[in-house]
Length: 546
Ligand SMILES: *Cc1c(COP(=O)(O)O)cnc(C)c1O
Image 1 (cartoon, protein in one colour):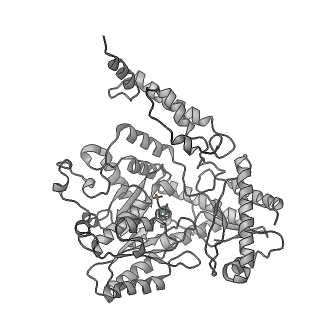
Image 2: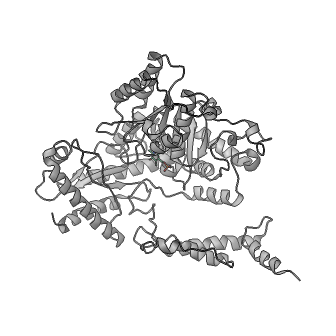
Image 3: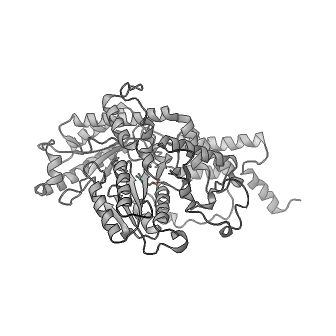
């Protein structure tokens, strides 16, 4: 007679994939996944959201208790699918919200396989050939960025934030040698632009430098860091005896696709090394988590334009490429495949031009007695993480292989094309005004005005003349109402879900400029979806009191 626990254990074993080939059980496993897909599928409709979107009850969630008994796989599946109710479908042609991509099938298979066999990239003893997948993804990305793959190296880490953390940490070790061992001492300075990602505060804070030692450099009207100000601030810091841990250049800011002038920043860095006779080279990290993908156009023939993009698209792609083609000048680069590389979260890679940089982070074998006694490849000796899953690396590799350079060109080119089309439509109406007209990315920030406003003049007036303060604030309010209407309509299956930014920029007299925002990142977006944005906005205009 089996003991009660044995009987229960048999059931639990059925809920795991079988370690030894068992075709019958395999089909149960596959069927279980299909059931989940079916259930999610039944939540789909015309609305770009899964099922109904209901208010969230956090108080009830806080009462959750571990169940006394077990459940079946089927019960848990039904329950899990329930958590997806109300989630935005990022790939839906009617979604234009933010930089969240729909993942490709190959990248999803990569995550299922890594979930299933659970390699740990800390050490090739625990990941074996999946370690090669990471090395291959690193090599492909390094050469795409223009690094020498024989000299470059990199690791997948916990997000775009992690890539900046790595870049600045390596820079800190260069500026304050031995910081890993001795602490940061009096600290060091980090520079980044005021359009750079807010993760700069985390990075400076968590590295022990302090967010107050982060110097934020202002940007020009195109969201590019002002080099003269960077030069003055860097000189001032060095004159006061501060080391510079890193200068973070952003290539593709989150909201506006601003592109810093990496070439000028690197030249400035070299100048400073000379002028102050520095014993180290201040580290230049390129936060290209969004912009990296545009590097596929660095050798695209914009003259013959073999993919047949429209002239406005070609201009935008060439304009972005002008800045992005210099990425290899940076000492390190952050890449998010989970943004413009169409993988699921988390798939972020930090690349270093010189692999010796990573040695600055190494711990000694004596500090890690239970790991790394053998094997050839041991990134865990220097990574921040101990366990490091294979999902990010394998999903990235899957998409690099699936899309190739041409597939990336087609996909990125298409979303830029749709963005340009949207701007063209918006510019075709007297009541709408595109704020970031000359921008090369896939975000469009725009405002809508009531009758009687001169939309040719208003943008400058609101931005630069305090006399227009009251009008600016009134129009902020007006645009918020437009947004509310468009959003409500989209949630009822009419139109497109866009988003809103409370402060696209500050005016010269320190008021926020609110803007409607369309962020196109779905390969499924088409002309009709772009036209629908304009139609809905005009419709809203007719319904909203001034
Ligand atoms: C999204 C983003 C980050 C942060 O990346 P996560 O992957 O969300 O951690 C950093 N920098 C820029 C420019 C970003 O757009």
